[in-house]
Length: 214
View 1 (cartoon, rainbow, N blue to C red):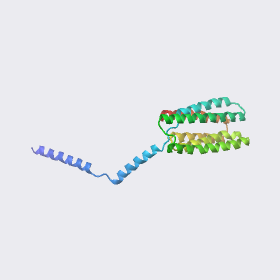
View 2 (cartoon, rainbow, N blue to C red; view 1 turned 90 degrees about the vertical axis):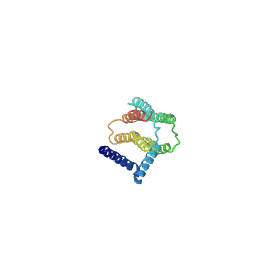
View 3 (cartoon, one colour; view 1 turned 30 degrees about the horizontal axis):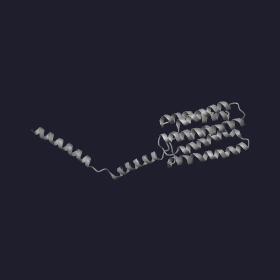
View 4 (cartoon, rainbow, N blue to C red; view 1 turned 135 degrees about the horizontal axis):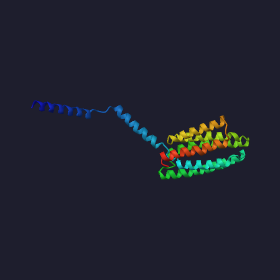
């Protein structure tokens, strides 16, 4: 009888301890920290432009590899024209691929993240177009491959700041390759352009497609 009463007291004490734990108020600073973390995570997801086309990047890379092979051994002026044509083709593929992926994912291209990504992506490309015109007139075509890779990488980094993390990483790789082409021109410009706009687009495009929905 005494043992049963002692056991009852222990059970009662355990329940009382558990009740005190449930009724203990949560510190307001902890609750505020949890709320701020939730709001920050939600805003980060809403501020990301996730319609970057992975398979579109692969298609751009494949066309660049074809152009690089065809332009091999061409005179500098003909290589320049060939890569200008490739730039137009790549821009067309990119626009179509972004539109298709955004429709498939039900993402609006007029949303604030999309507009921020576009506004960050375009200025380095416009600067590249202006410098290309000037350098072509000055017959300084050997500088263009490194310049194109460097400025395209800068565009991808700035635009990728509003997208998934792998996009700015790709931009940094383009910038490094462009800097190498300018500082250590051990290979022809056609080789650097093929490695960058061809191989890099294929590699990173495949990673984006597999990890971020095509």
